[in-house]
Image (cartoon, rainbow over all chains, first blue to last red; front, side, top):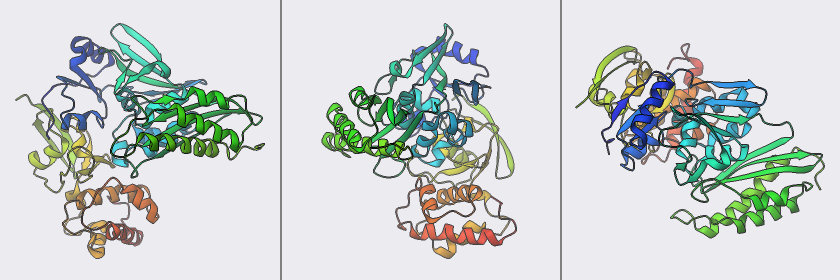
Length: 291
Length: 164
């Protein structure tokens, strides 16, 4: 179908964007790349009265290493830019590894990292990556700036902590610690499809012992989901295949993913366990001292 | 009907016109500019038939508003041939019988051109992965991949190999 009518706004500055959002509230949607919003509008699943196109706002397209602790991605950093940025590969390797899984090349040319996070599709990669990495979402409105931790950001299906008058202006990723390793794994019916189940994992290791772990799953609920029970199983333990199998079992019994025409709840649970083992193995194969 | 002005470069020329903001770039290219070589299948980003080059990179013209193309440089299938000389990818597809009904062909060619501009010697697996966002319901894909492989050889032997 054709996209329904809307009032189009093309502000040139962040201040103008925020004034428009303050004025129109939940009647307005921010248009960045539009790779999620425009198909929803074409399918008439969304029909905002106002579109605020941020494509002309300067400064949103930058990846910056402000200080040694964080790498910041502005609202217009394209997925393909993130995929190819050496700074991101080094400082936020989960983004680098997850990006090739996002849809197809032609979508990543235009789609943005922040847009994917703000859209909050629970089967998409970037929300889970933000969760696993402990990213901070920076929301701006005419009332000021709020920093929202990833743990508090994803509230439900396509639903985040952003208020109607706020935009996601940037996302900050803590610079990847030298002690951490990672993996992004997923199973989808075809390359580029949404994952049936996927996992972004971060594991911090000191002398062959896991000091901290984050297991963030996508495609298993109404938001990306961390499995704290399995993370606790891993913490403080020596790397071993038995440990990974135990964590996998805990994941399988902890999650309650939905069923659809592509996969049943039981299949998704099993898959989540398999992916847990696969991700932990992949993340740690280069590390010595395994039992 | 409210319209807004938009201006961009397309296939080497510059265009300026007014569009309704909700008009997709694909519809503007086909209906306002009369370039009907860009095809529309699903109109929600799944089939890849509407793929164009946006500042040299592949993009779905059905998933962009025409107004988002302001200031961009766009290449469509009509921009590939050089005068009467087909682009090597067009020649290669003809040699490989890389199409049957031809509906998906413009999108495949634009994706292939983008791939070869970035990676002039892709493996068969890389070709498959890069073209996985384009659907074909006739060929079974083998002849399309064969076509891209022929294009790799043709481009390696022509002096203007970098031309898109």
